[in-house]
Amino acid sequence: MSSGNRELLEFLDKSGAELYTLLTRLTLREDIAEELMQELFIKLSRSSGLKKAANWDAYARRAAINLAFDWRRGRRRAALRQLERVPEPVSNDDSPLAKLIHSEQLAETLDAIARLKRASREALIRRYIQQESYEHIAEQMGRTSHQVRAMCSRAVNHLRRTVGPNHRHSMQQEIHNVKDR
Image 1: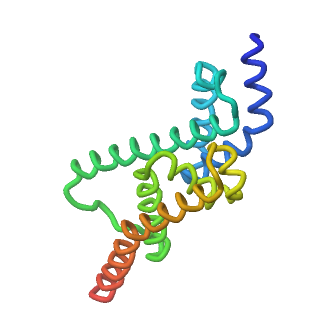
Image 2: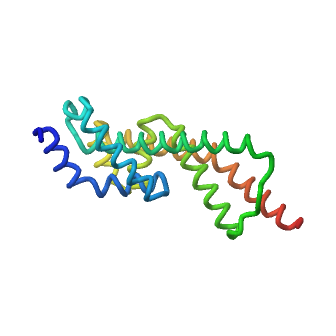
């Protein structure tokens, strides 16, 4: 085993649990998080960027975030292709309405986060999903804490504008449809 692979294994022993938790939160599926962890290890072991990176933790997190959102985009495309083949719903969902609406809202919010600029997305995820301090994020991203606060604030405002009205409208529409039955 080369010294580079040994260093990578030591790094993943130290940071692997946090990376796995991050992937689970972004994909909402543990089985996919496990697959993406394997993909992340392969990507990091082959990456020349990791060897050059001053901060392996920041580099690995960024790679994990990108893998998770790439998976979400691919899954969304597959779902859209599937919808094109099925003209109408085959069966009704037996889960409670509130749970269904919540899961759709969460998926829509994560899709909106995926459309943010890379730096804004990373700052937002680190602050609100991983609950890191502005100072720690700034250190990892090579920015000031004020810049990170501003990026997070702009990202949240953007999400409110793009996702907020849709959530309220879809909730009202679903409630209206249930009352009509």
